[in-house]
Image (cartoon, rainbow, N blue to C red):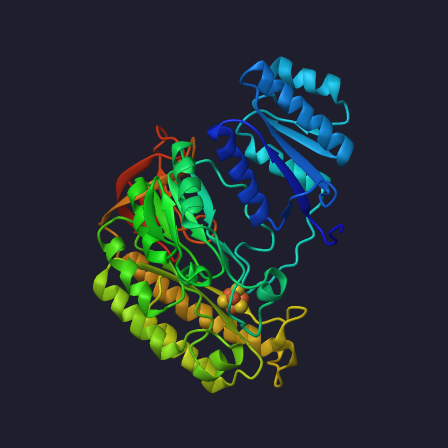
Length: 441
Ligand code: SF4
């Protein structure tokens, strides 16, 4: 049976562990961009062949694989060690129908070629998608996303992810750790752990024991965090729910094993609205968890997202949300105005909030949070912080601290400092702050 739907990519990966790292990075990026990786030529809309050019027999195997993909599918992108110099020319001579040829570690080019030939038709859920609708720019080489599971066991009423991607399926912990280790060996300095619910990791497997480098470990958030903490790079956790067992990973943050940063999507502060949203955590419990986390690790940065104007939200509910924000004193916050997502259960709820009121509440919410964020950043002036450099130009370097996830949080500007490279880790004193960003030198 042939699969229908959009964005289906086939992938043939040949060669050594280095080539495998390239394949994994390309696959992770394609999955983040909304492409499905399918196992057969007939289901795929395009096939990527990652080649190996190490010895003649490997080259022949690569050429054969390209030939097979051309005859079985017809639309083929070639990358990897055979994708440069004479080998690349040999590929084009033998297989002129190949759409694009790039060399090893050409993640960005391969992903761009896939986007070009199989234009992306995303089904976006603004409240629960792991990336913004415009997509993220391709991951620079010094940080990488580590996807630990697919799907979700919750049924939040505004969300269509479970209907689209099914229930939670956790990747075996050994596979996740192997991927993480290879990424670090390939030069990655920061791993961003993503899923729909990172705290639920392993529940579907009943925390099955897996193996990493021969060592038994459970498929569980804590074991994963402990092992990732041994890799010597920044480890940042996204999409963690405020469950009691999350308390167990906070000491790893206090000890500097993983970044003192938690991205906890809370969505609201009114118990009634959370009930209508069918959210997995209650507001008072969330505040209790936040207090507990700050007791264990006072330096923890907390990021969250919220929705204002959900159907049925009264002025009282909204004020409860503002009280919650005042109490929680979160460092980083994103806020959406509710809008229906096709297929979501919340579309059936009564009492929609008028657009003008949604806008007004959003502005009040943002004004309060800006003051909170600004005060929390001001308190950092005079402190020496670690900064991971993202880019450098003639004006200076721009990086991020442990408190800043790429794309969604703030930046740290090192004006006039030009002798650094992306991926460098430096220490500097914070000299200035605004509502979002820091300046250091
Ligand atoms: S936790 Fe809720 S919002 Fe997040 S993916 Fe699952 S159902 Fe959607």
